[in-house]
Image (cartoon, rainbow, N blue to C red; front, side, top):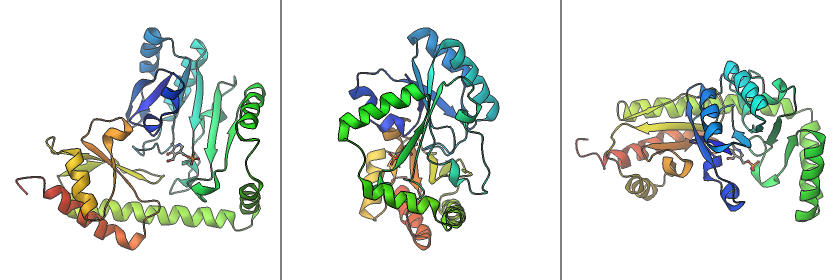
Length: 276
Ligand SMILES: Cc1ncc(COP(=O)(O)O)c(C=O)c1O
């Protein structure tokens, strides 16, 4: 199978523990390059593509619509299944609806996966899958064998929340709050670390993917220095990139603590740069 590089999928042990070989597709600002799927397929006979096309974790990028079409064409031609992992599209800051790959799929190639994790609570463990009936039947059977089914209580809570008249308002406020947090994170980084760090500004989601411009920075040391000051981030290497990147996640942090968090992170980073 092929996964994006970097990606959340990279950090998951599930594929390797099932004995699957994963091949990497580099993520650019417009998402993965469809032609690279062909090149990978020629070498490795891909069976599956695992993608997080909208506000990707960790890069925050969104796969371009034209590329989505082209990927569907390629996968149809070569018989490659697609898993579209989409927990973030509902939290685009301006409320834009981006066509999911599933909505463009005429042939049942796409298995669409999402959850309440990023919009309600990860602890509910409620998610959903859309796909061809035969695949869903098989997955339902696997789930049944796994744990007999999800507990009723979280399902009841989720059903109440989803049917509540306050749900849309909740999503609107979530988007608004996340945009404020993104802006504050970006502004704080510009104030503290202009020229030292560069980043892609996402239009949705909860992550800011930053490149450390100094190639000599030791990722482990930076992590330790930050931790000492009460700040954590995801080191780029855990998500598949080389170690000159870091991921900030502003989903849960309190808005008012963002500038102070970035100030402390900046102190940590500067303490490792001899010229600062
Ligand atoms: C792209 C992506 N997929 C899936 C997940 C996990 O979601 P869940 O809690 O629904 O398993 C995450 C969480 O970080 C994610 O970023």
